Length: 277
Image (cartoon, rainbow, N blue to C red; front, side, top):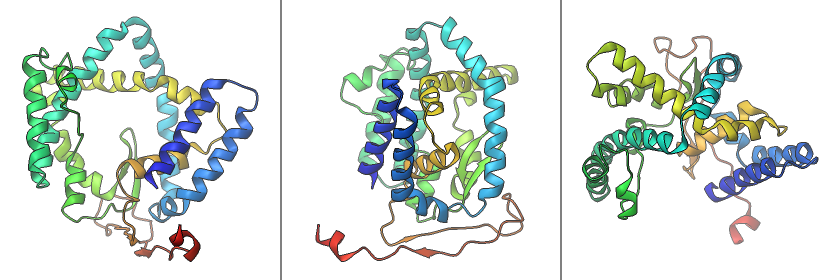
């Protein structure tokens, strides 16, 4: 499943780069292929779709009117090598948190390797501005507390779109306050510096996706469905071969109160012809 999703996503990007006149028709066919492979699972994990689409539309307007123009100006003013160094700096802080989560998951070898990666880049890489560790063979293994909760057995839960924060799930929403404590802003004690570093991280990240966003705009996709399924795929929510677990919080949770709980949905049995292959 993961391989097929990567192939389909790559096709979307290639079509966007060609700029030919048949983009719209090809994009529609790709959208249908993605929906056929993943749409049903994404739908099962999205019992609050009506609410989520409204929040998604709000976030799109916010991005269009505020974040995207700022990120565009930023990418035009700040040279690419400097933006790469900023990426590396933020990524280095993330590596330290990844090391902690890998240890919490019981993956001690991977945790030690991520710790070594953080140590190498923090020293030889000038506080992480230079990614020396990758050249030394210490690859990035990004983890967060949401993935750790998943490793401990907590299901993904219902898909949620939060204002400003964007795509999430019940499990990732519960993990968000803890992950926030390990964000780059914690390096600074001063409140104004925390705001500045958080804004820089947000703008720099958005600038990295400017071209990808433009390519998606040129293809006839339902952006909500595409982003939802891409998020759930990236978070490993489709990896369970036996069932898709939907955890919907009760009335006291922070999710939309009007949503109806969705039961655990068993995955349909695989056709005999497919199993034979």
